[in-house]
Amino acid sequence: MNKANPNQMIATAIHRERTRAGKSLSALAVEAGLAKSTLSQLENGAGNPSVETLWAIASALGIPFSFLFETQTRPTKLIRAHEGETIGSEQSDFVATLLSACAPSARRDIYRVLLQPGETRSSSAHPNGTVEHMLICTGKARVGPSGQEEELSQGDYFSFPGDLPHSYTALEPSTVMIMVMEST
Image (cartoon, rainbow, N blue to C red; front, side, top):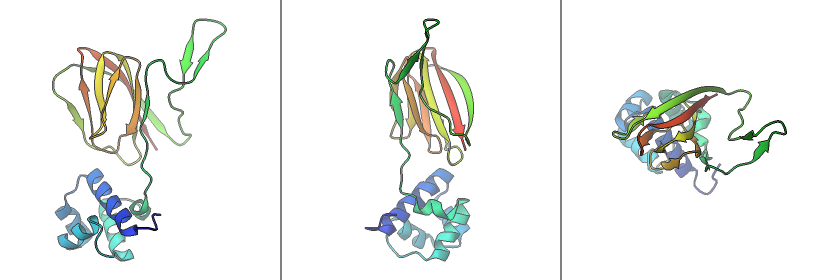
């Protein structure tokens, strides 16, 4: 916990979780039984929220109380083609690069995605804890959380929090990528 400014830590968490839930300030205030001005002050780091107020906010967001005290940002991970630790085979011309190990409690769905240039595919946040893994097979694309998109080329790998709004944009015709959705 950030001892220097706990109110700012809570403010950041309230804003983050409200954004993930796709709720307006007004809607959350109503659901939590708070005045909109009170919620606005808390989200701006002003005020001194009580435990009851924070419980009401967490309940209205449908999240554990502890989420309002999380300060750790989940990292993104970018591995360009020809990067990463590899393991070769003695039997054939086969080289494997581990891009991401799966936690025992995680679930992964794997998709092959074909993208064409044109409109950006925007995605709202998935359930809390979702991580997306992207591997470009052919072509180029710009993918990632809003404001943290990365341009990826053939062979590039990128993982990011899928529980934040994110997007996919093809930069070349017939871009193919492998998408893995991991959730806990």
